[in-house]
Length: 70
Image 1 (cartoon, one colour):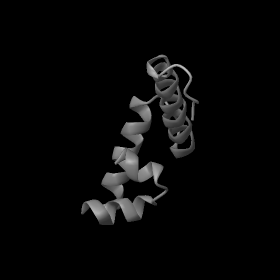
Image 2 (tube, one colour):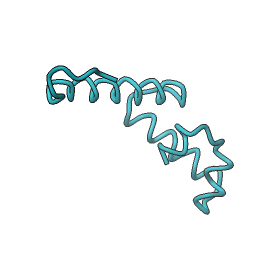
Image 3 (tube, one colour):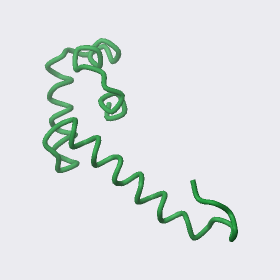
Image 4 (tube, one colour):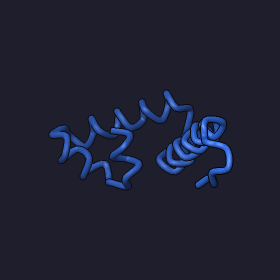
């Protein structure tokens, strides 16, 4: 579900794709936000990007010397 939120789908679109009600989808989104300690989809996106960038940074020591970073 988190990936569908990050893709920018509305709760109605997510509910339709998952075969659930919009109310169920809203409650699940709220639960996801609470677990991630964020207040909404904009903060979830920022949380995801920060963690993605942190993961990429931690992989840099494994790059071959002399190679350019992306």
